[in-house]
Image (cartoon, rainbow, N blue to C red):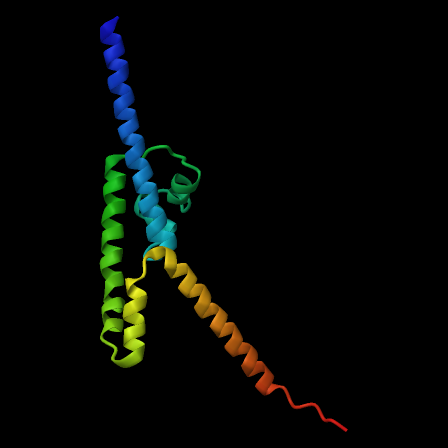
Length: 144
């Protein structure tokens, strides 16, 4: 009887370990795709020889619950390669001089949570700029 309990306990520990590894992988995928934008779910799914939504469903719907070790290795390798490729533009922007270079360097130092706010602010500024350009293009109304 005690042997069965020990086996069940060991199995539960293994299951919990696997689940925590899959949760960590889901967070890493979500960060790489949504926050950093260095790769897409579709690219990862096709690299695994699965349908285009396989990895997205793994992250969002938790189906499948687990991936095989070789699938995890492929995903980790692709994310690593994509992040190395993503660093080249950042290094190029850091070589800018003057105020613009300082601004880019400060933006690169922000954590990923602030990234969305910075992008939203930039979109807001672009919308204001577009509105001002539209006003400039409109002919002045004739006053009598």
